[in-house]
Amino acid sequence: MDPKFVDKKTIDEAYAAIGRIRERLGRAKPNYFIETYGCQMNEHDSEKLAGMLEAMGYTRTDDRTKADLILFNTCCIREHAEKRTFGNVGFIKEIKAENPSLILGVCGCMMQQKEVAKKLAARFPFVDMIFGTNELHIFPQLVERVMDGGRVFEIKDTEGEIAEGLPVKRCEGFSTFVNIMYGCNNFCSYCIVPYVRGRERSRRAQDIVEEVRRVVNDEGYTEVTLLGQNVNSYNDNGIRFPELLRMVNEVEGLKRLRFMTSHPKDLSHELVMAMAECDKVCEHIHLPVQSGSNRILKLMNRRYTREHYLDLVRDLRENVPGVEITTDIIVGFPTETEEDLEDTLSLVREVGFSAAYSFAYSVREGTVAARMDGQIPEEVKKERLKRLNAVIAETAVGANDKYMGMEGEILIEGRDLRGEPMMFGKLPSLKMVYVKGDESMIGKYYKVRVTGTRFNSIVGEIID
Ligand code: SAH
Ligand code: SF4
Ligand code: F3S
Image (tube, rainbow, N blue to C red):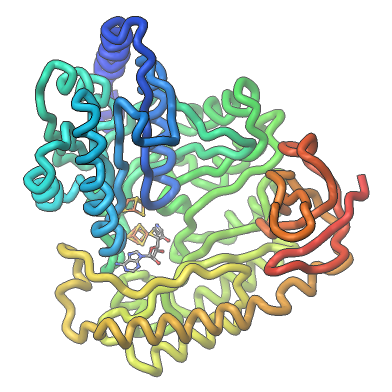
């Protein structure tokens, strides 16, 4: 057995614990509430926790005051995430006072930082269970320990493993996530993820294809997003990401295939061609650039240059017609000068992203950048973030014009209640389109022609 996989015996033990809890709960109909912070990786982990809880007999509630078990699945990518979590966990004290049998757990990336977890445990004695990112597959046993009167503090120092076969309760809708890999080996100098998510490890391609087949055929999803911190370094014994994409593209019944995130250093021409050739792969790529300055990119340990990034954009636009590119950008990285910032702003103008997520650099203890000289004062970071956002907004204006008259297919997601009520859905490029219609259209695909614009979106009419 490959050591990167959790062995079958351990998975069987998780199911046995689920069975025992189910028996123990008997006729009780307890509720659970999960609050998730951070990225899709965490969202999907919460779906796994939910899957196990439902197998135990718990039912989901959106009202934390009615919950018998509350989980906070935390993030630590930036400092404010931490502050928010501490605040929100603190509030549960009152709910716990009303319902002393309430089980309260805190897990996820922030808890994988042991010092922070210890601080949380000491500050909030009413927290029953704290566990890290490597304990998902023993979650049922941890719940059992709390039910037996124990307090759980379980954070394994491991490089991480892959657990197959645990139940998943996916969010309702037509679009869902499938993990293809876990962890990250890139160690971008600002980033905490490699420290809290362990080393890069890829699931077996066959397991991924099977899971996609299941969610499409048994659960009715038509859109799947393949998840990994850097999908371009996926490697299952020689099966690389472009090949995996081609394999998943073959799944019958699947309509749309997305993936994230791509790291520019390993985005190959082969992947661009796979995107171009696979009919289900959407014309969208999230390609975080982080900075437009080569000096800063080097300090960030991103291992590509501005010129390389622009080449990738050219390759994508040449080969994937209508492709939309979205990105992440950090301003205020240590030593960033006005000139570096100008390089970032000019790159934003040059590329014309359809969306750009901008962040002020946040010091993460333990990372290389945290120890760098030349930290930028908070006010300067804030001011630079404002300037970046202005350029992002300015480049977005007019970006909708190119859609006028265009035809494409949208997946209707819901009704918009602002102004004149209309239904909305997304094109493969993620562009939102508003059309006239009613609730019966939700979850279906319609061919539309774009006829106008509205807010940051476009309006269309159904032609089919
Ligand atoms: N694996 C993904 C990123 C995951 S984190 C990738 O490499 O693209 C999502 C985004 O958060 C990053 O792209 C980055 O822009 C931002 N981010 C990460 N660490 C940060 C920090 N210390 N301060 C500010 N933003 C940060
Ligand atoms: Fe963080 Fe870089 Fe890994 Fe993304 S690729 S998770 S930014 S270390
Ligand atoms: Fe994601 Fe936050 Fe963890 S961004 S991987 S949940 S630190």
